[in-house]
Image (cartoon, rainbow, N blue to C red; front, side, top):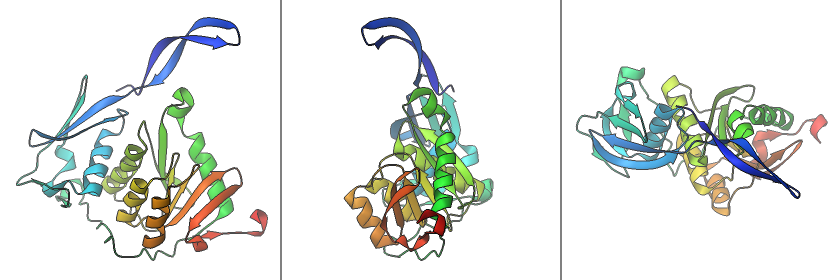
Length: 259
């Protein structure tokens, strides 16, 4: 599916006006069903749908039972319609997803919400600045439309997963889903985000034990509380050669060049 469309707009500059073609981000409804029974609908950018569904369902624990991402059907039309075949599935907000081995086995356990993340991963501030510059340069849809959010997973040296979506939460879910499907562990990783760090974003990283969460914008007070409690290093306003570290600053190393 095309993640953008063309629209004719009136472009006003000072006292002049002219007709022009502009690129806008696509927004489509995603309908997720289990055994042909719809359980969720949301709006998203129609890219990385499989990854979005896997990330959302596994992080939020919506299905209890066994299901296989490889057997997920995706139909593109006016809506994007996903159906998951899951034997003896139980839809539960408090459940968890256990997958079969048909996608190589998704075996990563979510971290208990009461367990503090003790990951000893660290990164020097200069490397984080370079990563964020690369992260922003990859945002092709944002450069085209100015309308989407980005998320990425990094090991501190390279960006190993990247996603864009009209929704901040969707972009993060796509990264989580991609990582699960590709067998990428979350230990020793950084989640990069383009938008506001809300409690929901912090909670998603908390559930998978991601030790560092960084954004070019600000966190909310509840996101800071979650990060402090769970042992996550929360960094905001990562711009140029500056950043604010709100929690667990021991993972951000300051070198002579960045003092």
